Length: 205
Image 1 (tube, helix red, strand yellow):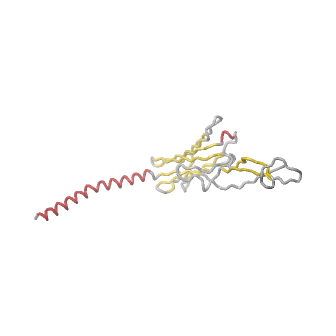
Image 2 (tube, rainbow, N blue to C red):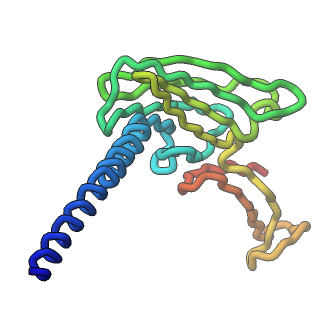
Image 3 (cartoon, rainbow, N blue to C red):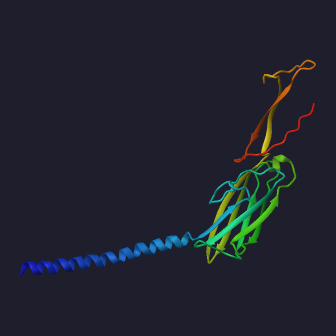
């Protein structure tokens, strides 16, 4: 008699525990879905400087020379799918300095691939006004949600001559050369890009 009663009590207790656990499991699942939906609208801003173009959230792109054209791309997706005809606002801020701070804002719509694009050139002004770190703050809104991304890049001369010195046939520094003597030139260059650069030097005597 007692073993059957205990067995029934055990079954009822186990069923009660399951009923108590089900709402908690459902609550956890709902929270996970909600968290996923909050992150489903993604805006990624990058440049044409492949492979170091700043692809990914809050990344930096390879640098630009003062004479180059910057091509900005804003890739907007919702649940991994591209969004078309959605406005993306690019806020571009130049490096802070004592002369003039360049700041401007442009809005572009995404195409069928979910890409909003913008091309701009640097003002041909004093180098001090444009050389430094530029920041792009991009924002988009869709179905009451917003997504943003920050991209930075440096503006400077990509290849810069650091030093030029005369050397003799053994590669050692020498200032004075006699008639018919062999003279060479040692040039030290700096490359601020993360990729190899081809450079042509012209040396005249």
